[in-house]
Length: 255
Image (cartoon, rainbow, N blue to C red; front, side, top):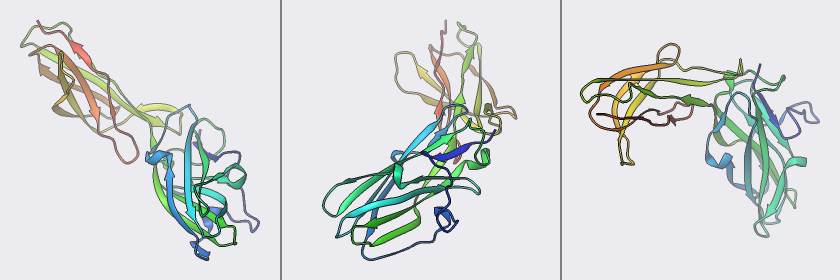
C-alpha cells in the first residue's frame, strides 16, 4: 500500500502545457509579492497508518491593485511524492485593499490504493504557489516555504514488579514504533535513543534517569533500583522523519 498524497479534489492534474505546477520555475511580473506562507500552522504533517490527515496552507500576498487569485498550491517532497490544490479549492480573503490571504487544504491518505511511494514521502517538502493580481501582475515560487512530513510514532512503558520493596530491582520495558506507509501498520523503530524518566509521587516534573537504545524490533528494556513511589516513562526526542513522543507514566508503589 502506498501513501496517497492528494490535493483536495485533484491529484497531479496536468496544466494546459502538459506539465505540473511543481515543474514551474520561479518568476513573475510586476510588483506583486508573497508576504507569508504557512503550512499546517507551522507544525510538521504527521501521518499514521489509517487516518486521512489534512494540512491547511495559507498564502498571504500583496499588490497595489489587490490580489485576484491563487492558481495553485503545490507541495513536492522526496521524488516522486507530490500533492496539489487548484484554484477551485482555494479561498482568498481580503485583509486590506492590497493584501489577501488565500487558503487551501492538502490531503494525506495512507490507505488509498493509488498514490506515490510510501515511506520515501517522509522528509522535507517544498511548497510552491502561483498568485496573480487584479492588474495581471503575477508571481510563482517553487519553494515559497518548506515543511516536514513525518511518520507517526507510538511509545509504551511498563515498570514491574508493582508493588516492589525498596532497594529491589525494577525492570522497565516498552516499545517504540512508527507508521509504515508501505504496509499500513506500525513497526518497531530500531536503534533509536530513548530517555527513561521518573516523576516522584505528588510531583509534576519528570527527570531523566538514563538513555536506552531500542532493539532491532523497537523494544526497550532496562533496570533501576526501587527508591520511592513514582512514575516511570520513556520519552523519544524524535527525528527528522518521526515526531517526538512521551509514553504515559507507569506508577510503581515502593514499600
